[in-house]
Length: 273
Length: 260
Image (cartoon, chains in turn blue, cyan):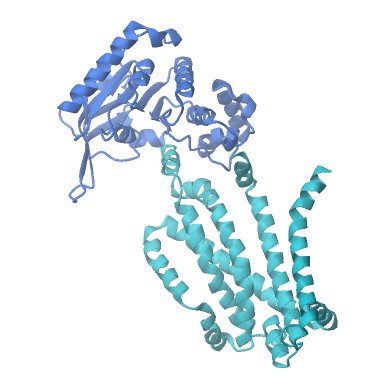
């Protein structure tokens, strides 16, 4: 499978089920050997189990988006291995084990809302009737059923991002990779979207890896916060967040605030080293 | 009622402007009375159209055929080349500098050379000038539209395991459509200019270009102007067809602009 020596046996340890994502000894260098060489990531080890909600947080240039792209096999590692569901990241991409959501909704203007959601299903060769049925289901999930025939440009930023999530979830992937998906939204819409995402996560039992630079967002959403620091990009702390089921009251919970403080301290420590 | 009102609002100003322009033209010439050959009044151009109607219709047909076929070929080749250079980096490195070099050539200057290649009386040489002139704006604009795609949309398609050609079909080509139609509309007027100027140097003797040079040579300027008028009508019709096509092919584009 791979020739890296000391590798944790994911299959055995977790009692059968392979890790959703297993990153071992990964480094990433852009433009190697050239004058603009950048060490984006170094010595990354990370194991994510099915059903987790893991946030990657850190300042600009810490490589959190790069790590997400390595897991998505949109770019290759320089060293180490990335496996998704026990397969290579690239095989997982071709098998459509995961789906991505970006900061910009990236909906296609030439497709209406429903047909945007159907796009991945079309690429997978689904029949039109099945596509339409699933698209309606997904619109129901993100509560936008009445906008099926609307044009993306007629929707607000938050609604567009909900369509992007519906599109990402349309083929029931096991893993959702989100790159600052709410970064361009205003604070009120953002909190609403966080609640919606947690509801969808609870309903679908999907594994989520979520990149953000908002501490409060990271703590509110995730079961685990991975704190990263720059130059070179690395994991400086992993903080478990045990706040139980989230709701609006969670945002005023002292336990929530102590987690926020813990993440903030970890970010500060990481930045100084 | 409302539709009629908005139609009136759209058509009335240009019609009024044209009426004022031609009326002013007619009136000015009636006042200063220059020699007829300097600038004939619109009324005598209309008279020349009536008098030489058959000749003008034939000439418009001959030149119109060259314009339309040359335009279609130029657009097809330009769009195809744009897809090619977007899909293959090596094609981009070879074809783009070549196209830029070709564009630097004053294409009209090639007309006599094309005549030597295809025969002085052959319409092929005129078509060739149209093709070469139309090619460039279509190629450059379409290539830009194919290339200027939001990077995350490409990553999204790659994350779904879509290959290069699928991304071309689903993302790049629809994205390039507004650019392509801008070039097509530009191409319609370029094609008219190219065909008529090319006909000054050769091609069929019953075409618009020849009618203009011959009439002017015989100081029948009203006939020359009538031929110019026929050429511009062809241009206006082609432009209108391009606008209608644009609406039919990408209704989403206009819907998005209305919403924005």
